[in-house]
Amino acid sequence: MPAKVAVNGYGTIGKRVADAVSLQDDMEIVGVSKMSPNFEARLAIERGYPLYATTKEVLPKFEKAGFKVHGTLENLLKEADLVIDATPEESGFRAAYEKAGVKAIWQGGEEHSLTGLSFNAAANYAECLGAKFVRVPSCNTTGLIRTLYPLDVHFGVDHVLAVLVRRATDPGDSKKGPINAIEPELEMPSHHGPDVQSVLPKLNIHTIAVKVPTTIMHLHAVSVTLKRKATVDGVLDAWRRTPRLTFVKGGEGVKSTAQIMELARDLSRSRSDLYEIALWEDGVHVVDGRQLYYFQAVHQESDVVPENIDAIRAMLELERDGRKSIERTDRSLGIPTPAA
Ligand code: NAD
Image (cartoon, rainbow, N blue to C red; front, top):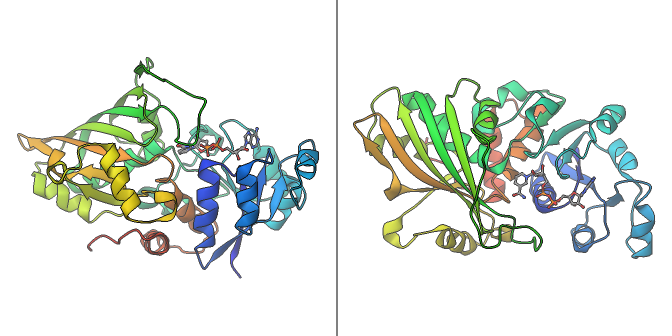
C-alpha cells in the first residue's frame, strides 16, 4: 500500500511536491487543502487531487465558486500518514497535526525550532528516520548544503563566507519588490548561515544577503577556506559524485541565470524546473591550495522538491538507505544519477 500524503498549502512549493509525490510508486496524494478557490485550486482538481478547504470558515467560498470540495483540512488529515505543510511561514498548524496524529514536513519559511530537525537527503537522512516532525530548509540553505557538505567530507571546511544575491520574488507573483533597487539584508550574519548549521551544526559559515530585482533564480558567490589542499579538478570531481548538482560553462555562453533557466526549459521537465544546483565549472578557482571560490545558482521554486520526497521516505521509513531514496526520487524526476 502506498503511503498517504496530504498537502496543506497548494502554492509554489505545495503543487510541485504534490506532483513529485504522485510520480513515486511508494506514496500517493490523498488530497490538498487551500484557503482560496483560485486557479491553483482548479489545477488541483484537474490533476485529480481531492480538494479540501483549509478551514470551515473558507469552505463556503469554494462552494460559492463552484469548486467540489471533500471537506476541510481536519477531514483530510484523517486520510493521511503525513502532511506536507507548504503554507506561508508561521501559519501555525502544528497543534492540528498533533491532534490528528499525523507526521508533518514544513518548509524553509519556518524556524528550525518548530521541529528541532532539519533535513537534507545527502547530509542527514539517517537522523530523520521515523521522525514525527521535520523541516526542509529554504531553497538557499538547501543550495549551500548541497555544495558545502561534499567539500567538508572530501577536504574539510575550515570556514565559509557566502554572499547570497537573492531573487525578489517568484515569477508568478506580481506584488512584491524590490522593483528597481538593491536591498541589503542588514542583519549579520543573514539567517542563512545559522540555517545551514541546522543541518551541518559544525560548519563554520557566515552569510551576507542582498535582494535584487529578478524573479528567476538566486545566485551565490562562495568563498571556502579548506582544511586540506585541493585543486579545481579535485573539487569538481567531488561535486560530480554528488547528487543534485549540475554544471554549466560561461565559455559555452552560460553567462547568467537567464541562460541557466533557458537550459532548464530545454530539459523539458515539468514547469521547466531545475531541481539541481547549477555550478559554473569555469567559475571555480583555487588559490594556494586551500582557498576556494565558486558561483552557484539556485532555482528557488524547485530545488527543495526532491528533498521533500526523501524526507517523506525517511520519516515513514519507506526506505532506510538515503542513497537509494535519492536515486529513486531522482530517477522519477529525470535528474541524472552522478558517477559512483
Ligand atoms: P505560496 O504563497 O506560493 O503558497 C502558499 C499556499 O498556502 C497557497 O496555496 C495559499 O492559498 C495557502 N495559504 C495562504 N495563507 C494560508 C494560511 N494562513 N493558512 C493556510 N494556507 C494558507 O508560498 P510558497 O512560496 O509555496 O511558500 C510555502 C513555504 O515554502 C514557505 O515556508 C516558504 O518560505 C517555503 N519556500 C518557498 C520557496 C519559494 O521560492 N517560493 C522556496 C523554498 C521554500
